[in-house]
Picture 1 (cartoon, rainbow, N blue to C red):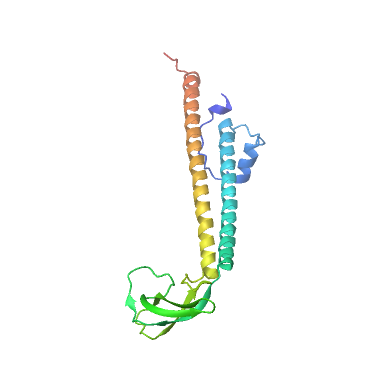
Picture 2: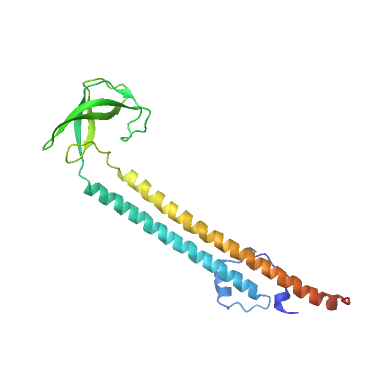
Length: 210
C-alpha cells in the first residue's frame, strides 16, 4: 500500500505550524506518512501566509500615503481663522454640519480678512446664537468660507481607516482564494483515496471483486 493510501487527515490538525508547513512545502519533511497532497496543502498555506504579509505591507503603505496626503493638503491650503459677526438669529438646520459644532444652526454673518475686504454669507453657529454674536470661522486667502482644517486625530483616523480597508480587502481575497483551492485539493485527495481503497480493499480483506 502506498503512502498516498494513508487515511485522509484534517488539514487543520494541531501541530501544523507555519514552520511545519514551510518545511513540508520545501520537501524537507521525510516522514513516510507525509503524502504529496500534504505537501501541496502546505504550499497553499505558505502562499496564503505570504499573501497576508503582502496585504499587511500594502495596508502600511496606504496608511502612510493617506497620512502624507492629508498633511500635505493641510499645508498647501491656506486657511485662516477669523471672527464673524452674525446679523441674524441662528436657524436650526437639519443638514450635516461642516464645522463639527454640536447642535449647529445657520446664521447670516459678516466678516473680513486683510487684503480681501468685507464678506457676507451664511455660516454655521451653535444653536441659540443671537444676532450680533461673534463666532470664529475659517476662510481661504480670498476670504471665502472653507472647512475647518482636520486635526492630527482626524488625519490619523483617516489614515487608519485607509490601512484597515486595504488590509481587509486584500487579506480577505487571499483567504477566500486559499480556502477555495484547499477545498478543491481536499476533494481530489478524497477521490484518489477512495479509488485506491476500492482497488486494494478486496485483496486486503480477502474478498473477491465481482
